[in-house]
Structure formats: C-alpha cells, structure tokens
Amino acid sequence: ETYTLSILEGIYSPDYYTNIENYNIILDDEKVEFTITKRELVITTSEAYLYNEKAGFQTYGTEQVYNNEPYTYLVVHDNFTIVDGLSIVDGERISVNAEIYKDGNLVDEVKDAGSYKFVIKDIIYGENALEDNYSITISDDVATYTVTPRNIVIGLENIDNATKIYDGKEVVYSSSSNNFVLYEGTTLAQDDELLITTTLKDEDESVIDFAINVGVYTWTYLDIQGVNTSLDNYNISFYNDIKTSTFSIERREVTISLYKVDDSYSHTYDGSYFD
Image 1: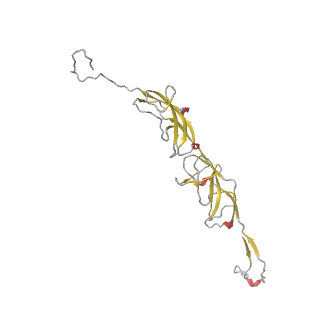
Image 2: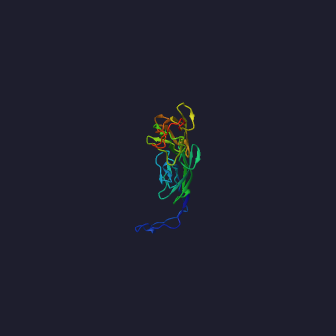
Image 3: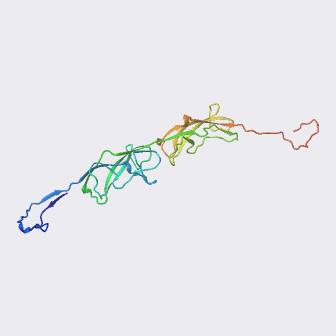
C-alpha cells in the first residue's frame, strides 16, 4: 500500500541548545510518498504435519510401513515449508488446508499402501496476519509420503504333520479369518483379517471335501483374500516356501472280548444250536 507524508505544522527545536528563532524556515507544499510492498514467499506442504487423531501423534520422515492407522493433514499455524522468499512476520500466524491425493485420486486420509501427495487448497490468515500484507505463491513441488506394504510370512495350519485318532467326525480346513500361522515374528496390522482357501487331497491324490477315515491327507494352498483390507497392503511369502500341510487320521485301538452272561452259565448238549 502507498502512503503520503506532508508537513502539517511548523518545525520545533529538538533540543535545548537550538534556537528556532535563528532560522527562517519556509514550509514546502511538496508531499512525499512511500510504499510498503507485500511480503513475498513461496510455500509448499510438509509431510511432517500428518496427524493420527486416534493415536494422537504426528508422523516424521517420508514413509512408513502399513499399519492400518489413518492420517490426515494437520491444520496448525506454520504447517508448511517456505521454499523461497521471506519468512512470516514474528507474531503473525498463517496455516494451510491441504488435499490428499493417492495415485492421482483425491482421498480423505493416508492409510493404505501407496504413494500420496499433499496439495495446498486454502491459505488461512490467522492471528495478526492480513492477506493484503502477503503475496504467497504455492509451489508446484509438493510434499509426498509413501506407505509401504507390510511383510508377513505365513504357513498353513497343521504344518507340523498333525495327527488325530479316528473318531468318525469330518475334518475340514478352518474357514475363519486369519486361518494360517505367522512366522519369523511377522504380524498383521491391527484389526486386519485375511482368509486362506485350500484344497484337500487324500493318498490317491483325489480332491475331497473332508477327511474322515484313516489315512494321510494334504491341504494345498489355493488362494488368499482380504476380508477387511486390501492385499495390496501386504507382501506375503510362505515359510520355507511351503504351501502344503499334511495330517493323518490313525486307527482307533479297541479291545474286545466274547460276551457271556456270567461265569456260572452252562448248557448240556442236546443237539440244538447254541447262540
């Protein structure tokens, strides 16, 4: 903004030693103009302002392993990076709203594995800051953040050649979520559920629906799917690259003896059948 200065009244002596009467001062009508220019700066987003409301903390760095935790862009003062120009004046507060994009698509939060960009949508002038005092340019170079897939090592249940004694009951592979064993200290993200499907074969390599009789059976991995999460959030490998699991049903041992009424029972031969 441009300002104009002009002399309104006469000149006064600034100190005791100067006598104004010693001067014949003519006041000029000329006015002086001066301009206060806008404070120029170029800003962009910062990955340091990703905020997990559930856990109550901010992230640091440019990537993390998928953990099924949602993050949004935190709106607080100075939540951006100045890439060129001057700083914000001390005592003034400016913040930004940022939109989150994943693979070019607008999303509400950072959570699933993938690459994210944070694009400034609005500039918010807060405490003592006036928009007219700033010329802020939004940089095309935006902050990025990567959520990498979570590594897990799995194996089929009963991978240790489990056995059972024949009991006349059908045996099928579990159809419950997370129906596998995790190895090498790997874990699923909190509340995530995956589901494995298998085929079952008997000793003749015939595919069957269930095992019930004595014999050796083999579960073979067929497929895995996410129940409440995307498989893209995981890098899945099999323990020792084993995708089968065998188990056996063993014979049931029983002891039998001939039935008799009591020790004193006897029969005199009479030529007839005895039963």
